[in-house]
Length: 266
Image (tube, rainbow, N blue to C red; front, side, top):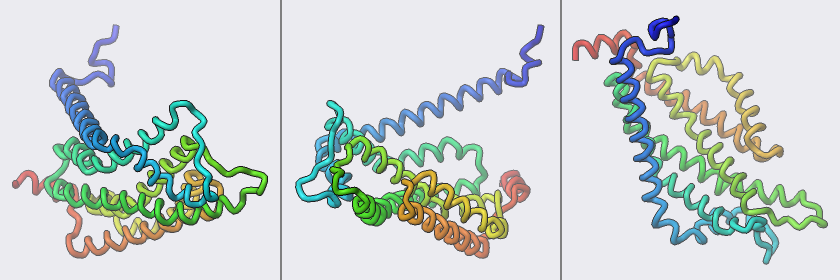
């Protein structure tokens, strides 16, 4: 009969098991706090669900012929889809707090010089995500929908379903929001010493190919939307390299050995 010590998945000591459980409890607490923050932002916004969805759908409805409206093919769609759009806005409003909760969960395991990145990362990540969503809403959608509508045959009544539009817009928002996080990710990786600027430069050709592959998978099967995701992704990759190189000259990244020595002497 095997004992608990024979199982590699079993904690080595009661102390380790207790520590694992405490981490799970803390994770649950921070998830609950994040959910409460989203709920607090959602409650007042529910009074403006109609206006929020009209604004959400404006890039598409402005392309439709005068008098044409989006369709609701489900009984509860007129309520659920505006509620989902409002929930999305509430999540964006609560995003700084959610990011802070994520950082606070991992911060105890980081070095002091890594913890100093907290505030810049949270602020810049939030702003860059908003920039990506805004770029998608004001630029991509304004160019994409007229192109799509121009290909519709005259025999087709172009009036998309509101649920289909919401799913499409949500996917595009998150795709561009995450795309605009590229410089932040590169800066963090270089500051933590995980990769170097030289390594990033060496993988540039592979990243460009990968960017177009990702754009082909995420966006609709048309050249316009694919280019409008792949090109910003490549530009942001170059921007991340430039910022990382600039920061390396001002503040050379600390190695793990140096960080361990600094922690011991602190």
